Length: 123
Image (tube, rainbow, N blue to C red):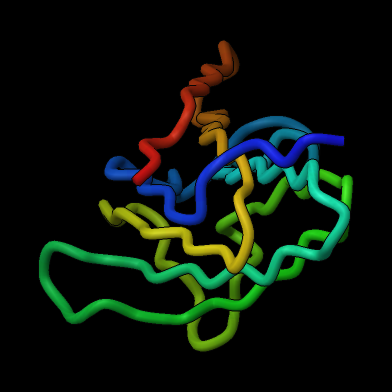
């Protein structure tokens, strides 16, 4: 299969709501980077988080196996430190091989849930 994507992606708008309504984990408010690897080799991913009021944090390291997708919840990132809820952030996602990244947010703070999804900016 042909390899699609880029090696660097930027999500300039990140925000994990502090709470949600509805059953967990399905309706936990969250941010997700959907990463698609169409190549025949694994993708080694490094994520750096940027804040408005402190130095960047990272890298968070993730692997996406060959010809697989990974829906990575930013809520689940723990090492080097958890991403705080209720805080604006942005991120740079770098891969050793081309991948495709889509950004999704589930905001379940109200009973009427909101879902946002957009393709990330690639470099």
